Length: 436
Image 1 (tube, helix red, strand yellow):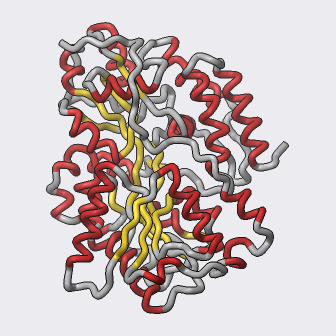
Image 2 (cartoon, rainbow, N blue to C red):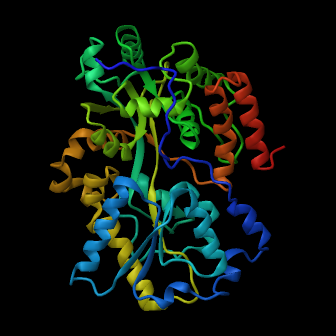
Image 3 (cartoon, rainbow, N blue to C red):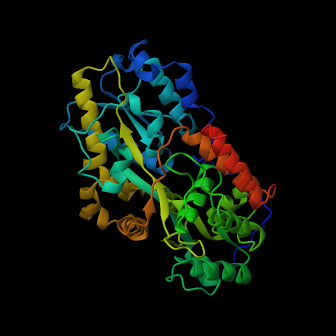
C-alpha cells in the first residue's frame, strides 16, 4: 500500500495552462486602425529564404512527438512535392510570437491556433472556404473556425475534459473499478469511499485557465453560462454561487483535494489520487504513470440539468502575407488538408486528441486502437450526444479568463471565500470588456 504526505509539495512540470501576459488586443490598438493587414509585408517574409512551408506548432511532450513524426513522414514521401519546415514554439510564447510575426509582416505559412483565439486574428487570416470547407469535419468542431460564413481555420481535433480515475485505488477503497464515477452521485460515493478507506487524495483538478473552464463546464451543466454573447459576466447567479461553493468544498469541506495543486499533480503521477479532471492529451501522462486507469464523463456537479464537458480545438490557420506567392499558398493549403484529414486518425490514436475528420473517426486504424477503447470512445460519445460545449471566441479572451481563474486559484489557496470570488471575477470581466 502506498502512503502519502498530504502536505507535501513537489515541483510540477508546466502543463501549458499558465497565464500569458502579452495582450494582442492592446498591441493591435497601438498599431492604429490599419491593424495587422495595414502593415503586413513591411519587413518582408523571413520564411521566403527557406524552401517549403513554414509551420509553427505549440505541441510538446507526447503530442509534440506525434506531430513531428507526421511531418517527417510527409517530408520523406515521394507523393508530395514540397517540404514542411516545422518549428515548435513553447506554449507560453506561441501567441505572442505569432502575433508579433503577423504585425511585422513575416508570419509563418501555417500555424496552430485554438478556436477561442479567433477574434483577435480574424482580420488577418486567409479564408479556405472553397479550398477545404467544413464538410469533412464534425460540424460542431468545424464551426469554431467559421467567422461570418467564411472558414478561417480548419480543425485538427477537439480536446474535451474527462474524469480519469485510478482503478487500483478504487479496488483498495472497496469500489468496483468497472462502475465509473460518471454522475454526481457516483462521484460523491467514490470520493468519500477513497477518503474513508485509503490514505489517498480522492480528487485533483486544474489550476490556471482550465480552472476557469472547469467553472464554465459546471455552470453550463446547471443551465448557466460564464459570459453572455455581449461579453457580460453571467455567473453572479444562484447557480454560479453554487458552482464556486462546490469547487471550494472539494478542498475545504470534503477534503477530497489538496490545497496545493502541485501536490495534487505529483501525487496523481505517483498513483496516489483517486480521480483527476483532465483533457484528451492526458492519456500519455497516465500511460507513463503506470497504474490501471479508466476514463469517464466529468458529470460531477450536483443538481445538473444538462451535464456537459467543455473543450477547445486545435485549428490550423494560414496567416495573410503579401510576400507569399500562389505556389507557396497552395502548398500551405495542402499541408492543412493533410494534417487535418489524411493523418488525422493518427493524431487521435497516437496523440490522444479526438480527431475532427469524419473519415478519421470512422477509420479502422482509430477504432481498433487502444486509445479509442481507453478514452476516445467516451469523448466521442459526449460530442455525439450534444454533451459538449466549446469556449466562445471573444476579444480579449486571455484577459477575461485570467480575471476568473485568478480568484479561483486564490480560493483554492485559502485566501478568499466563494462570494469574494464571484465579486472579484465579475468586476474583472466587466473591466476587460469596458462594462464598468
